[in-house]
Image (tube, rainbow, N blue to C red):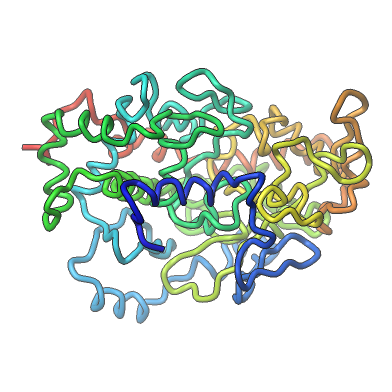
Length: 437
């Protein structure tokens, strides 16, 4: 797909891909896509391996580092970007047309925290993605720059570089460079509100002293580095270095620190990886997520699941417009199917679910223990456990109060304090800019 068929036309195309058009949604998710009974949108790809059922094995084969493969990548990529990765994390995939560089990441960090990316200059990307909350916002549903409420919860950006899908329910929006267009220029709902005001944004950026240095350095071969495409490329580069890998869980499983996890967290890890609770089937591998991508992974599979959160009217319906992948494909079996988020830093990113309707981790456990949520009355009344579209993994379980506390202790052990206080990911504007000199 050409980036421009006319000025900024590619923005409109990407917005359609992400937001859809009720009158013109494709009948399928795309060529080659098929579905199985549990919400996997199959590209012509293989499934991702599932973790073994012990806390140390739960990292799974995905976390292994192949030294030979790494050497081949070193030889193939010049100059090599210095990723902030531990040995047990693979390298993220980067598009060929947006190679990583230190100055591009710094440019993206400035843009991420810049309120000039909203039409009324009241919000930045960081308004809905706050570092201290693992780059989520603490709200059930996001509020845009004009005060309009988004229909969905702001997803945490933890390790977003590894996510095979980037929004709650789009099987077609798979690259950060494309996703960045949506909050800036989308109008259903309005987030940053710059649709049709591309030149206004670029004028603002050209007028800033830091940007007059950072943009040319980030894109030295560009005749005019100030373009919307380069804005989204820089934002994407910054998001790719939002790497969280220093939780107590990491220090215990990968670092060999026997004292990093409490005994309660260890017991909770065993529960998490048990067939009784089934958590690990969807939250597996080094990123606790079942649909990921990285260099050397090979075949990719996009996975979405209906967890029985709603069953409006008893026919499996979800409240519009939050019908999941169904909103794109219009296929009944895609009703209520949403992406599995990573569980890294999950204790910081409440409330939970695509619409923020589970306020606490206790409420999430209640939902899964019941095999689906029951809403007794009101417009969304229904027994989610009886949904005809619910995942086969959501079967319900019994859990004692002591086990519940252990499970929450394990989930809290995935919190990475280094990540949420890392100055390299923080607002750069109050500090001097070394790369702007």
